[in-house]
Image 1 (cartoon, helix red, strand yellow):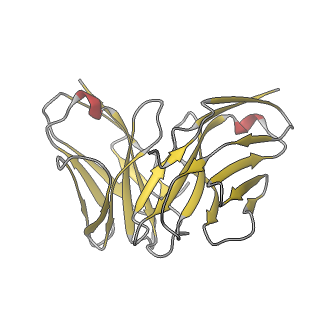
Image 2: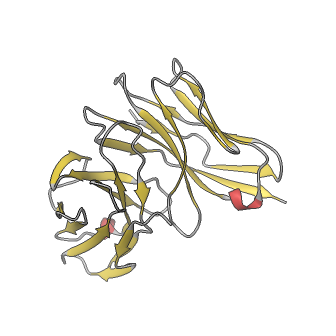
Length: 115
Length: 114
């Protein structure tokens, strides 16, 4: 089974609107971490937001929030007030393992923000 | 910028050759991980090093090997290169600890195998 599943290969959103990028994960560990990264066309991987498995509140970082539904094993990224500079690939990722020594990425979602 | 550097930026090799990629960690970070990102795909975890020892490995064959040095810089070595090894290789440094330890990525090395 895939550890991280992102079912939206591509998404379009109008500038200034909100958009949700989907992510589901698979793990039997009780302790794990979930991450979202942004990868512009230049290739660098930019950290956006983190959610720990024991965190009861959804993580927020500026315009980014993570909708964490533990029972459903989903960790969707919500971007509010989209900007043209948000156009990029977005990857959901999970860290697990006895020493948090395994890291898995999804296949990504290409977000295009339209003016 | 994250403070993680990688060299070289681009590299072209032929099938069967060997390659060494280098990574310099962010100051204060003691853990480095390497990833392979094929075109149009998400990064795949190769392995992680902590205190100069491999302490986690993804589904990659033994011809992918690594080193971590006392200054926490790192090398990824790939022997007997195959065409499918063509990819962007990313290294990421972090401070070993909890699952919340953030990884900071370098800009990557683009490897092309002909």
